[in-house]
Length: 132
Image 1 (cartoon, rainbow, N blue to C red):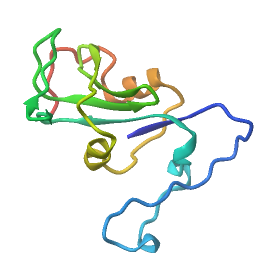
Image 2: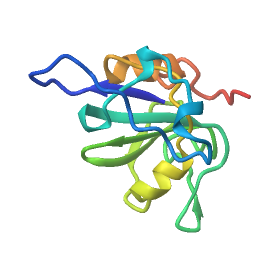
Image 3: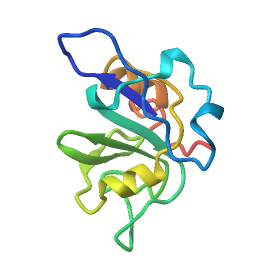
Image 4: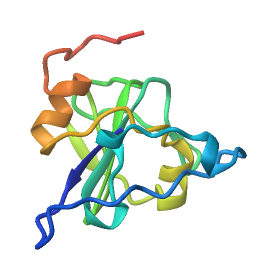
């Protein structure tokens, strides 16, 4: 999952609130470089390797026909799905709660969206390839 800080008057970031995992917050050791104030992020994104079922339908890329291996993105404008072929579309049927339920732990921080998509392989480099 990648985060990008919004431009603000303060360059200092606060630790992110711990996720509900069933364990106590004291047992979660989040590295300092991954602590991000969720109120200052411009987007959240994570890879979803399997099929993605939204409102009873399986997501399919209308450009290349792929049926799995997505980048799921939440930005101020809404939730988007991106295919490895670089086709990106809004997904209004997915709620913020569904996004949060799918989202895993933070694994990296990106300065901008281009860096995030390159780091996760959604910049077109792996177009037509399913990674396992």
